[in-house]
Length: 371
Ligand SMILES: Cc1cc2nc3c(=O)[nH]c(=O)nc-3n(C[C@H](O)[C@H](O)[C@H](O)COP(=O)(O)OP(=O)(O)OC[C@H]3O[C@@H](n4cnc5c(N)ncnc54)[C@H](O)[C@@H]3O)c2cc1C
Image 1: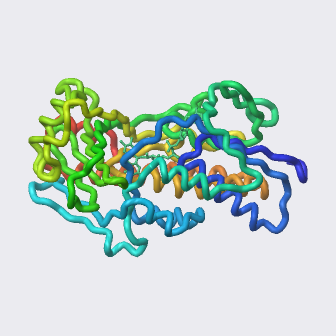
Image 2: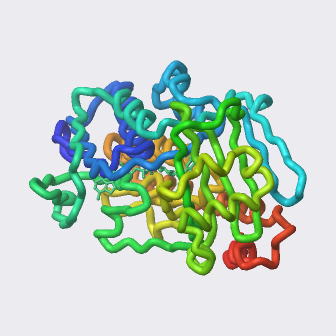
Image 3: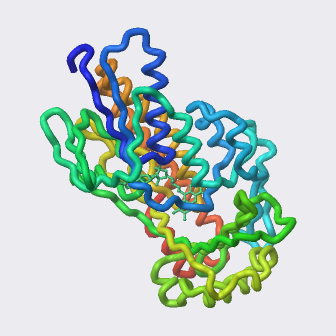
């Protein structure tokens, strides 16, 4: 790279991962005593529908503070004091966050959360390109030409933060290894019953597991997670079957009066795969967040991982561009791979701790991959 050359960094995706990379990179650039290059960052986003119903654990607070999200931003979401679960036994277990030094967890208004991340990124050398869906990538001698519907741009460096679709990495031929795939069938209820605790509720049943949480604006999410084949065989993607299954649960049916779920309730289907790209770095590009690796929603760790690894990716990018540190990308890839191995062990231990149904297909399917 020539001194004082203009360097263009394209970030595909403005979710938690993309924003965290931009944040860390620009912060390091601001602090650098000698700026070797002129930098511009372009963040493209297809504005795909934003997921709903996510929560973050106390551990996410540290990463959010690190990228400059102030405490009062947290307060616009719903605090979560912990969880109640029926998992591995017929009695309710409790796990509270009170003893966590980081504080509490939050049930997010996800659209607002994404806006807040973006709003904290207003800088001169950064431009957002909403409604820009990457559709084609052509490698060139000095980088990558990125094609969108009505325009194209040449980028020296590309950050793939496009979520599970891994829109950039997939287009340059990187494979994704899918180790497991759980499907969530969720409904969002607009008027939550009064006096519901601000906790997460989880319940294991023979064919999968339930998740229930209050959301900001007096909404709640109730989701059933299972395998594709089990859902098809039992018709659980039909609201009547879904509700009938709910009526057989212990904890959930106690929390939610069945008559608030109408026959017209829309089931939102989302896949939550355990997956990782075969490589998360390459010539002047890296993948981050769900684009690099995705976790089963039982871990509730996707956003925290996107933020934490986004910070590391931002550092690696700065090290490569400003200090010509070639090792930084390799170190970042090692981190993503070792985090994924740690996650696989955690996932295995969580599913293994449910022993009542270990012979049932949903539960035995979870152990087809090794930890
Ligand atoms: C059922 C379910 C429940 C979950 N629950 C939780 C939870 O409770 N807690 C938690 O922490 N995590 C949870 N997750 C995971 C969490 O949603 C993700 O890990 C997190 O959103 C990843 O952030 P990201 O920035 O990597 O990607 P995303 O948030 O997916 O952002 C990717 C962005 O890229 C854009 N994009 C995609 N394709 C293109 C393209 N071709 N061109 C341009 N832009 C593009 C999209 O519009 C989007 O804005 C859950 C996931 C599922 C499926």
